[in-house]
Every structure is written in C-alpha cells, then in structure tokens.
Length: 160
Image 1 (spheres, helix red, strand yellow):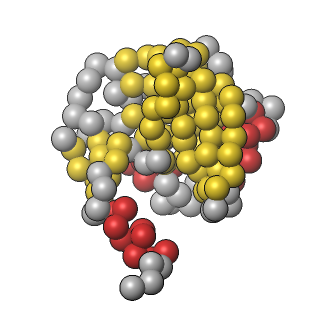
Image 2 (image 1 turned 90 degrees about the horizontal axis):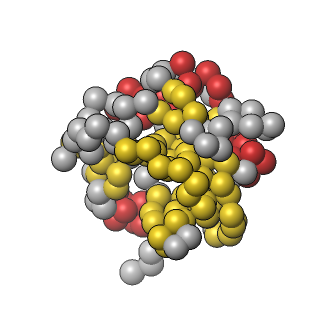
C-alpha cells in the first residue's frame, strides 16, 4: 500500500488536537491563524513549537515580526476559530475584529477569554516539507478562567 497525502490527512483528522489561534503583530503587520499543530518542547527554557503551512500569509508575518502568541480556545469560541481558519474571507488585521484582544509582554495579540495564552519570541525555525516549524521561547503566560477546552477531531469541533 502506498501512502498518499490524502491517507495521511485522513489519519491525522482522527487525532484530537487543541484548537489554538497563533497571532502576531509588529513591523510586518498583524496576522493570525487557527492552528492545531502546537506542542511543548521544553520547560527550561520554556519552549513550544508551532507548525504553520509555508503558503499561509501568516507564516511570513510571524517570521518577520519574530513574536507570536498561542491562544488555547474554549467551548463557545468556535466563531473566532472559524474566522482565523479563513472561513468568511477575512485576512490579516481584519480577523481581529472577531473576539476581544489585548497584549502581553512581546506585544503580540492575546485573546481575552482563552483557556491560556503563551506569549513567545521566535527562537528557531526549521523548514520541513510544506510547513515551517517555529520554535517559540515563552516569555509570559496568562491563564484563563478555565472552561471546557475546545478540540478538533473528525473535521469538527468538540468541547471536552
């Protein structure tokens, strides 16, 4: 059996992942995207990795700004996730009209009401296949009030 990209995507659609919005602002502008490819790397120094499709407009903006947040969503924030996933046709800074946003230490946008926000400075970058693997050193953390985590599996949202 030959593995196709479609087979691989179908298999991974069955893996539940936290729904996050990765957001940036700086000299290259304001941008963000919905992302499920986020994981911790180390706690000393506190580091996460985020995988972003190379052809995404947000990819180049994050790389140029060198700062980003990872905002973990809760049940009820599906409309924000949809906008940042590109549903509705909004681009760049237009997306930030959805949801309430403020800033943490780096100046990158932080989503109010998120389960948690990691405020990161880009520390390393590796290009792999169709994606950029962005390593972010976490400079600040904001913990939300809780709420049911929002996950994505089987090509739809679920609250757990």
